[in-house]
Image 1 (tube, rainbow, N blue to C red):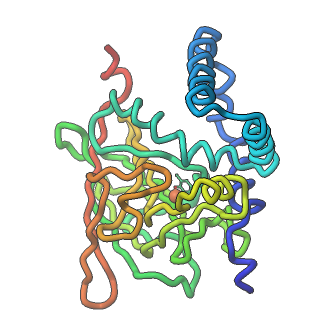
Image 2: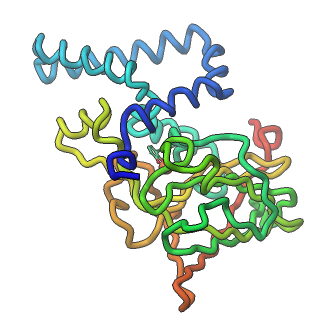
Length: 289
Ligand code: MBD
Ligand code: FE
């Protein structure tokens, strides 16, 4: 395949994220927002827009440019991409105010449910010639009191060593570097994968165009995505990053937290290993005030 086919396009990753979103239960939940909340929150958003226009004395050409851009984001299917990159981190920050245990961070637009179930120790599905430094990622899922969490599952997805996600890049096999790993009776897990590359927002779509027009950079640091769950516990959606990696201090999606940075150790054979334990709080019932 040529480099052109490999380069991320708006028609590829961004738009597929819209199709994916429209089939999730997250989309269903959108029907249940009560009118009082719509009134209060939309009013506040509009107040913010009005304030920005006054402060910066926004002109008619600028207003029309904004309108054209908003239309393009919709037509290009990049709303999930744009919102997850520039807005989700604050929603997560608010949710985190009531969450104990391992730090969470944003879900992002590239989660696909229903991946292959694998029993630990497991290897994520990958191509025979998958490139990238082999990584062994091991640890234990426990509750906030330090007890092992039986029945724990680690739903994991990541970019490959070129920064592409399966399901959102046509050259990758379905399910590549995605898997639902079932931990042992004591919540212990060991997962073999490869170290991902940093992720670049597609530069040819409306989100990338905006980033370029504003003079920002389009990069996220390399990361693993995880949803860690166990029966009777509140699942945690998070990401793990790599110490010393590029863009750690300037993630375009503002989703890095210092507690989420791994430091894999080279095992002398080109393989790296790292341990990370997850702490889950008990389910909503136990937490309700
Ligand atoms: C990603 O891989 C990602 O994790 C987020 C949050 C946004 C865009 C691409
Ligand atoms: Fe990601």
